[in-house]
Image (cartoon, rainbow, N blue to C red; front, top):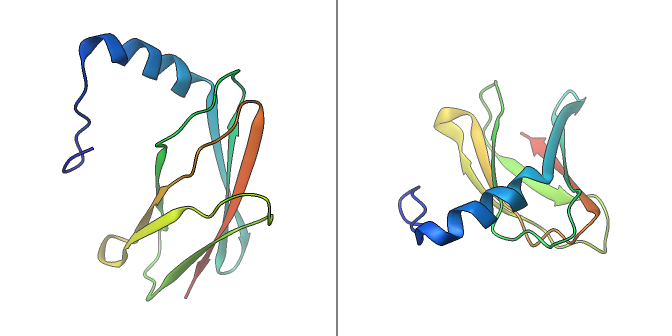
Length: 106
């Protein structure tokens, strides 16, 4: 990934699309200052290098992202507070597994 663009060989696009089709993302408001994001991999192969953009729909000063269970790795959070959004770079999502994260807004 470079400057928001993904550079790859043409023969890698199809397998990448097949992997991503097995991933679902759900978000919900979990409190006045919290958003829950859940990612599920329904496929038989691990999916890595997933990135999510979550629009916060309100002005915030700071965001914190926390995993919901100890067994999963934390995502890298890249907030853009002027645009009221946060990008999440997720750790690898194993086959037939789900990960959930709280985004706390301050």
